[in-house]
Image (tube, rainbow, N blue to C red; front, side):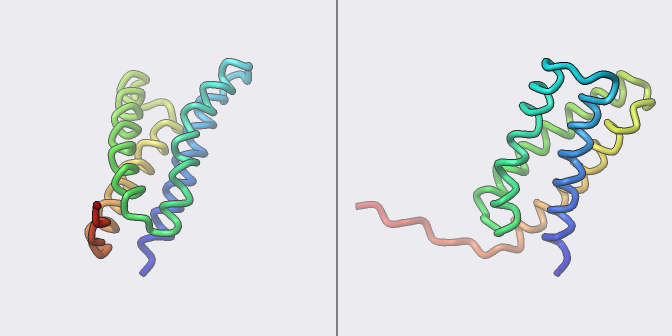
Length: 115
């Protein structure tokens, strides 16, 4: 199906919108570090999302709740005038929904036996 490519697309849009929203007014070294910190966790989960690793998808869903919450706070604080943050919010919420569907549809693997 097209759920995984859509989730990866939302993931890329979210990372791009977050980076652009941090760097937009002026680019300073501090803003570059902040943008890197914000997008580092998204970059680390991208490979697992592409390959359909269930544990990465589960961790990503928790991470997306935090990103959606933070973006929601920023949208409300700026009275909806920040277009890039609004795009990031929409991408985070859509990706969260898609990720939850992907987690639900993936087969549950048996845990490794402990000796």
